[in-house]
Length: 482
Ligand code: BG6
Image (cartoon, rainbow, N blue to C red; front, side, top):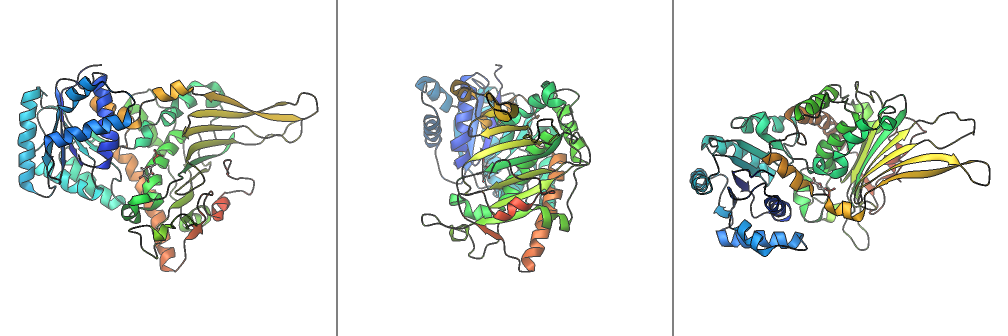
């Protein structure tokens, strides 16, 4: 791999994301030679840490995520880290940061290349972007910015944030991260769809009855109640991860595999996204909130959550497009906290056909994203000794060794930022479409709240509120994964 000279500034250098994801991912890229001699990382946060203390944290973070570590490499790696105590609203602090970045650029011959990483609470993104512009933190080489989610909390605030960021950065240099786009099986959707005639030729609304996306979590909101109260499942999981997955499932075939062509194909689809009206939302969307059990708190008892909170920890709904291979076909989704088990999966449900054998099951194609990576197709064949049809799975499995080889999503996506590949990042025009949809659903729910309608409560560790089983367009549809 080519060594890429760069100074990287991480806003939120003492935070959880940097510790759990970014530092280990950077170490892996270092070990592969993508960053090596000509790089430095500046971690910033309010705490009064020293360079040494940050280096120790980085070293701990690498140890916590790796079974074996080459200690010499690790020591060499951490020597590239610098800490700058920083208040994001203080103009002088940006001047100090700029000087430090300039010095490091000279020391490491980083060729004026900068990557800014927004890894702190989203309410600061706009302020930081504004200061990067006002205090001229960009340099003479490439200048890229990585922005964590959530990018805004509705279309209006996302537009405002985008304005602040585009004051200093071109759209091509803005990397809006969605860690689901770094997952192996999400990256596998397009190859699966477009390299297999068996799959490509049936990928249309004439053959497929519906598609179902399930992102189920076993954990509750844990310590994130404060953030979650401002978000809810719709903004936290649907606006980004679920919509990106749905886009990959429904987009037309791209002209080629360049980032430009892939985003064009996505946009062609999203321009035809059908925004539901109030009646459709009432019929095809369900929100819920988890109750407590003997052993666990209900959502309303979680720390930093209002006692009468109406924030949803579960949502199920439907998306349709006017164009594309699966035009007008329902794509159902659901996601929630404290569900039966951690499972991220996609089920493609084919229509039934008339058979001379009488009723037979239809074929389904299931793509399991987490926790194990797997694809399986249900298929019919004859029973051996008695009349009738039996149903088996054709499996595409990943061995344990293969699963272990799969890089973490963050490592993949950081790599892409370094090599300037924005294929697996969210473009502004996509995000705009997603927010338009979300805003309409949020408004409808707001209205319901004002009318005193209570959110569905659900028992923990099942599959969410019962009402989620009734969002379908026809009585012959149901969740494949129950
Ligand atoms: C994050 C959400 O984006 O995704 C979290 O903010 C959620 O609430 C997480 O738990 C799930 O990601 P994964 O990769 O564990 O499925």
